[in-house]
Amino acid sequence: MAQDSGRLNQPPVVEVRGLTRRYGARTIIDGVDLDIGRGEFVALLGRSGSGKSTFLRALAGLDHGVPGSGRLGTPDAVSVVFQDARLLPWKRVVDNVTLGLNGQTPRERALHALAEVELTARAQAWPTQLSGGEQQRAALARSLVREPELLLLDEPFGALDALTRLRMQALLLDLCARHRPAVLLVTHDVDEAIHLAQRVLVLDEGRFVVDLDVGLPAEAGARQRRFAEVRGQLLSSLGVTGEELRRVA
Amino acid sequence: MADLSLTGGQGVVDPAWLKLARSQPVGVADKPRRRRKLGPGRPIPYGATLGPVLLLILWSIGSATGYIDDRILSAPWTVATTGWELIQDGRLQENLWTSFQRSFWGLFWGIVAGASLGVIAGLSRIGEYLVDGPIQIKRAIPALALIPLLMLWFGIGEGMKILTIALITFAPIYIQTHDGLRSTDARFIELAETLDLSNGQFLRHVVLPAALPGFLLGLRFGVTYSWLALVVVEQVNATSGLGYMINLARTYGQTEVIILCLAVYAALGLSSDWLVRFITRKALPWRKILAD
Ligand SMILES: Nc1ncnc2c1ncn2[C@@H]1O[C@H](COP(=O)(O)OP(=O)(O)OP(=O)(O)O)[C@@H](O)[C@H]1O
Ligand SMILES: [Mg+2]
Image (tube, rainbow over all chains, first blue to last red; front, top):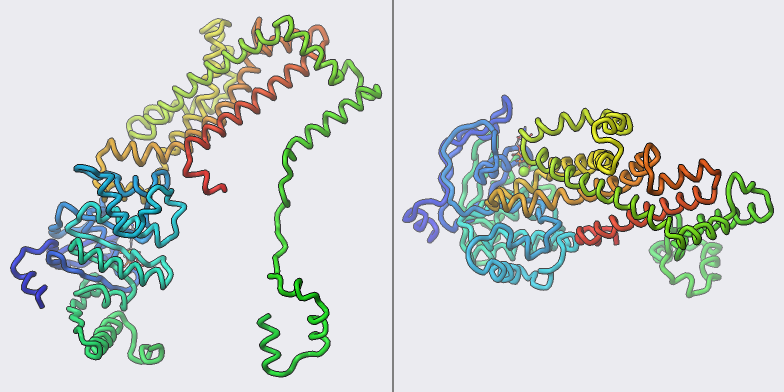
């Protein structure tokens, strides 16, 4: 709840009003509003094709020529992490992190960022020599070295195996606790959303149909109950029936 | 192994099958089963020389037994001694040097024109509209058909020869460079936008490196074409060079000189191709690891 008071006192980092995006005749994002507070971690869920990436790309300013309207207030320093690590294959890992970095001692800062994601030893490697998880860690380092006020992640761990994903999630939490950017994480994984985010949105038919504060209590038993409750709520809003839920869980 | 423990656990082991398994030496049974490797098999050191050496042997035997007529195809040793004589009186080096210079300068201007026009057409829309059309039309005209016109315009001197070679070599370099620039991965363009790269940074760090493999591929074609073009211009009209030597030898019926010149062409072609591949390896170190 400390977050909430913080949200009230400071102006939000992201301010979206009546945002609409269309592909052809189909309205993908249909006049949504959204505020994200400073340092707030928001997860965005939604069925495949519901428009999560479309929304994220609008926030990142990457949707040139996609017709639509609305007001978008985003900070200057925005970083994006994509599902593929998107490292330039002709640049060594450290040079990928330094890419486009302004200010003093870019190289030292890049090496520091690589140390934070435990990739110091691979700084001089070519991206193709890294494993999928290592590549994604390098991409994280590249996005954080810019000290973004807003970090946008589009299914960053979607292509990783379960174990690597778990470790990446822990790493992401650590990094966000340290750098405190506002985060919008697009994911398919309901559990991931609940574990990582303070607030979860569900996008359906172009609108946010769910906007809930996760608020997991510290005490183990209560935490488990709250987790199950939120999980059930999110899954049902994503169209999973109670019957289906009972059969697999 | 898994099968064995499963059936053993259920107590329904087929005795004949078990005997078969036992009769195998333990060492063999414990070895992990290797799959048969598909593909052409293991490389042999210097194996690539096997075919040419075999041909050389057949040629020698044919000549020694008189099976190959000396007027049709000179014996290998005749070619070798002729080569030695031509080197001693300096004619071979002289003509080779002349040919090499023509090829080199033709290729040089071909690279300059091909790369710069490729960059112009690849980086700007206006440039593409202005440059690409004429080049596509020029490409549709066989280069050899241009020679009479070039001779009328530029005479039969060195300038015309170098220009012809340049005109022939620049096409593949232009096409590959242009293509490399145009097909920069959209994902990397998006990345450059999210990193707020300036136009200059975008060019230097993303576009040009992405186009480099294309340019080098074009260069490899260009080098091959430059030898091809050389043969053509020298046989059309020349008073020096390898092509001239061949023409002269034909007049006097000296097959050994013709063969010698062909061998020199082969050596030039092979070594320049090797050189381009060497440059490619050095210029694209990040590529190497994929091939390893
Ligand atoms: N460039 C495009 N042109 C036309 N339609 C598009 C384009 N990009 C996306 N769409 C459509 O917009 C809808 C939303 O796509 P979007 O990529 O935002 O979905 P998503 O929620 O990110 O899905 P996923 O979870 O599978 O990544 C989809 O129906 C898709 O077909
Ligand atoms: Mg998506």
